[in-house]
Length: 178
Image 1 (tube, one colour):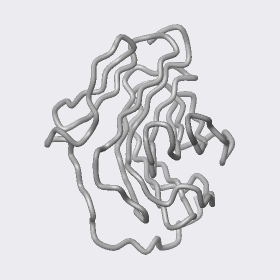
Image 2 (cartoon, helix red, strand yellow):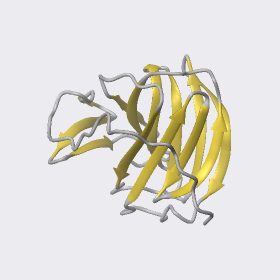
Image 3 (tube, helix red, strand yellow):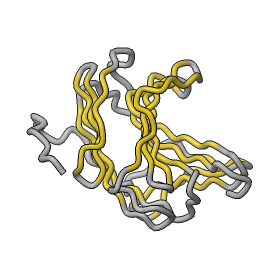
């Protein structure tokens, strides 16, 4: 891959190993759960075609670089998971989607309606199927956004709609099995 230019990173604003509970939204519903484990946070989808999210309560961030480790344990090709960025509320945010089939894309969700910002593309950085161990990273500066998997830049997008907001995660079962 082409080397990534310097991102202009400064001091660490937030570090969370999920050992301190209370920042992420937790719940148990008929279609799944969001819960803390031992130094991890898990979204477990237990219903067909269910979609789960969990937002971090604070801080609201505007310009930032985020890295998170993701490790889907049950994941079929069309199932997806990823990051919610600059979330204004549970219905408005940027959604970075990763599929277990090795694809990625970016959507802007406003009032529950998704608009495509970066169409599907395959990535050699995403191992197909369950058991993938990925380091997802997002660089957000003003309207500019850059997305990385395991240190390799996947794509860049510019969109001025959401300039600040919360962070979160999502998981979606695409088929008739959890």
